[in-house]
Amino acid sequence: MRSLAYFTGERHGHVSIIAVSEAGEGKGVGSTLMRAAEEWARSSGCGRLTLNVFEANGRARAVYERLGYRVETLRYVKVLRLKHATSKQKMY
Image 1 (cartoon, rainbow, N blue to C red):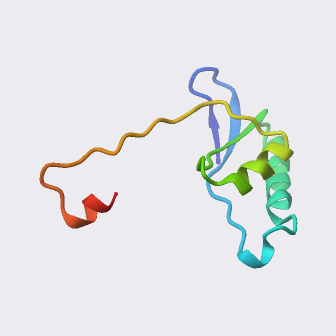
Image 2: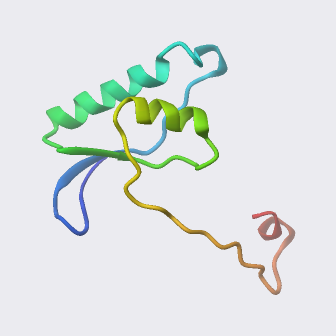
C-alpha cells in the first residue's frame, strides 16, 4: 500500500500483513518477502517502508531489525470494560 505520511507529506509504502508458514520459518522466507516489498516501494517512488508488529513477536522483530528497520512510534492500548458488553466484546 502507498500513502503519504501525515506529518511530512512524504510518500511511503506500508506492509499491512506478512505471514510465513511454520514450514518456512527460519529459512529466510520473511527476509525475502521484506526485500521484495522494499524493491516494490523503491520502484514506486517511496522513500520509506513502514510496518506494524506486535511487541511480543520477538522473532519477527529480530528479522526486521536485521534488515535495518527501527522503532519510530509506540502505540499505547488500554482495554476498556464495557458496561453492557456482549460475551464476544468481553473477550477483547
